Image 1 (cartoon, rainbow, N blue to C red):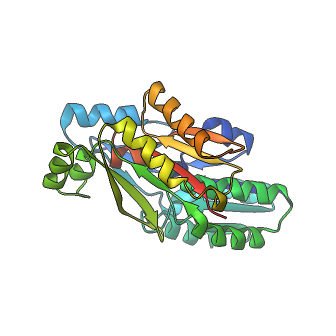
Image 2: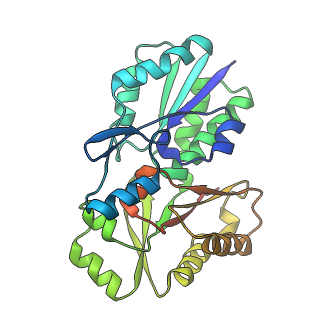
Length: 280
């Protein structure tokens, strides 16, 4: 069967991986200064940071409408035997619900909730591509992906909390306290939602290495075919330290370094970094 894999721009996969697996990105909208821009195509995280620095105002994000999804699905549904679309977790956006409603217009479009974001979502997308290449039927692929979502481990360590405070996801007092105490907060995805995890104290590079080491400590229970290091604008020096820390924890076949898109960057700000993998 010819199966087409599509996904939202929130998956944060690199252009190289998108091209390698022939994945098509459907862009969410980023609202900046009252104007709507297509994420990944018309706006990037540096534009978001510049807007916040200049105006003090946050950008916002908007889901694709049912009509948007119908228009995107239409040519692929005609060309391929099946289309499998993987969404950001429905707890973060109404994209999944809208895509499901749009899929009802077609006989061969399937929609999967990744129950994750960023490259946690990206792991599910790549798994779909690999299962499709193996010749698996689309219904079976969707069932296997649904089982996989419980095994994806996604988290990030934040260098700053002011973006979360501006977005109403933590109080200004908590952000100020964390800055004064030099606390770096770990944000974890669990059950399709997001919450605060461990707090690390000290310089960001030290906290980052400690975070990676702890997340990958149970290496025997982790799939080593691929791991993502996803960041929202780290320096080359910090990226190199992150890669070295991951390599020290275990031998991964593929270590993919990707830049987070506008959705993660808009909520977490610069110098956010996550290590994302799949448990056995």
